[in-house]
Length: 493
Image: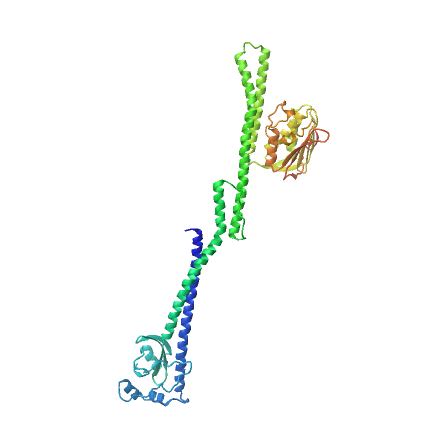
């Protein structure tokens, strides 16, 4: 069964239950009211009889004769010829009274008088006790000669009780007609509820149908660009919004995945291209040494061996950079608070020892940042190596202030054509192709900065040279440590 049919069925059942309950309640209230009217008529008739036998009230002679002449009443009850007059005949019913059937009994249960020779009202122990003066008046139902009767038993005087009965024929007829009317109304109401349930279910399931179609479209075409327009601020509207948000997240994830796959393929292709040249050179030199070792003089052999060693060093550097790039893309759990100014000072000291004769000027503000020390150290080291490589013998200026790190060299600078691409993997400008290096150093720097959530840029410095600028979010000023070396704060190395 479809969801729409289940919703329609649930709505129809709910309305049907409500209609049936309303009909049952209407029927019960109507039956109670109609029977209450019969009881009120019988009670009014009994009140008239009680008033007629009060000692100080004007009474009907016929009724007193019956009540005071037990012998004549019994004779009439046993079939004698001395029949008393109708004790109820002179008590004219009021407008709200119905005469019906009347019966006079004594405490022994004998019928002293009955208004109809064809109808004898049932006399039970409760009626006899009431005639004897024990108990209170009561109502009961009985079926006599096929007629449903409502009976009121009332004590009168001198061990006598009167039974007043009213046929329920009209009430039963009205209730029977009411049952038919209510049954028809219930049937019509249930049919209408089913129809309205289908309409309501169609309106309610419409957004779900569109959601299903969008899901099937994504499954079939892998197209994540489709969206569902929320129709209202309700559960279905929020579901549509959640689905759109999920599509946004999937689209971003797929975009990131595609970019990652493309980057990996590009990295493999670039690495293959970069590895091909030194490997070919090493293989050629080794084959020459193997095949012509006896014909080559020792000086040429030493030159070939030197070329092999140089190419192996270049391969080693390239492999290390590739490993750093691969590891840098993995999550690193060992992030910690790092004194960035101290780390830069230590890297600068090592760079100073590698680049003999270079001057590194430092202006470092005590700064605390959370990150992976080894990655930050590698990024700063690559920046300094790049500055030393392209500005040999020239001073290098390093400044750290307000969460921004700048490295400026005084070399020939970077051409405007190469400037947008210097952070790409394996990119080497025209001026750098004759220099040693893998073309991955600045790519590693950008990767580390991206992982920190920062930005990196390169620009031509005023007066010549290149200015590298890194902005790191989350950097906070720190109190200087007494044991920190002064050159790592400010000055020249």
